[in-house]
Image 1: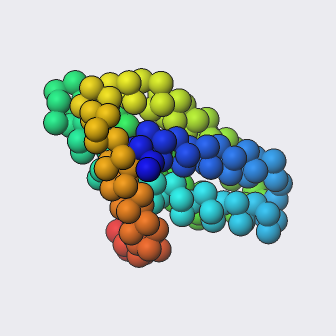
Image 2: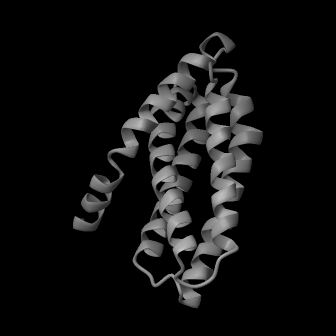
Length: 158
């Protein structure tokens, strides 16, 4: 069984590695494109699943509303940067500068979730429900992975 906290942290660990891989590349190379594609797809499905299964539960408590709204707002801000980066030339200095902003912001976001939000969430999601929420998160993430391209098309149409 995988708890909600273990599932989210495992994704964060994957994201950290991908961010480091991307940061360690230069120009419009196959390695950068592949790492970026993997990161983009995984973070998009992760964020949507997290909002739908984890943050929606936190909002049931008044203190959880602020924490959830703050994190969802950060997701939206990072989403804007992700889409901006998708539209830029990976070999440009502007791409790298914008990527560094995303990396910094997302590393801060992950740290905040793991250090602060998880502690508060444990007050709402009792140990007896950790695994159920983990299963729900993973199932929703899998469904979201199939929707990433469709959602991107909708975003571009707006």
